[in-house]
Image 1: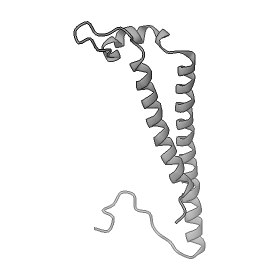
Image 2: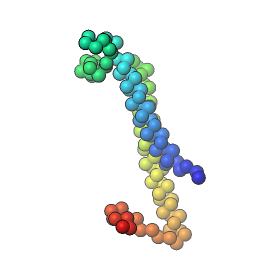
Image 3: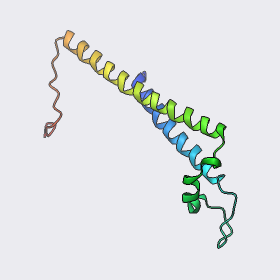
Image 4: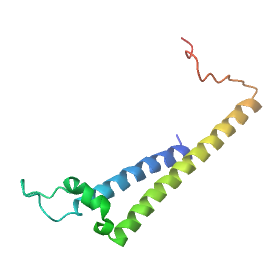
Amino acid sequence: MKKRLSSILRSMAIGGLVASAVVRVLIQFTASPVPDPVSGRTEPSLFAPAISSNWQYITPWQSLLLAVLTGGALACFAGWLAVAWLERKADAARSASAGQFHARRTVDRQGR
């Protein structure tokens, strides 16, 4: 069975959001090279106030990568909404031309 374009765009949008979150976490792990004095480990989440007040921890390339990933995910999300609406409209027109009428019950017990 052929996958619908809306299904592909939905998968791409979710995948893009996951990818941008992973990249953001990786950038934050490299943000603070100073180890924690107590544990000796580098944990950027402990330095969040310093990171949020100073954006010098992120390079222009990392910023561009985040912008491209997030923008692509948002474009896929918008495309998914538009294509799903068009597919639904085409399915309704196809079933109407075939003489079928299916009442859409959005708030009901769905045949129970």
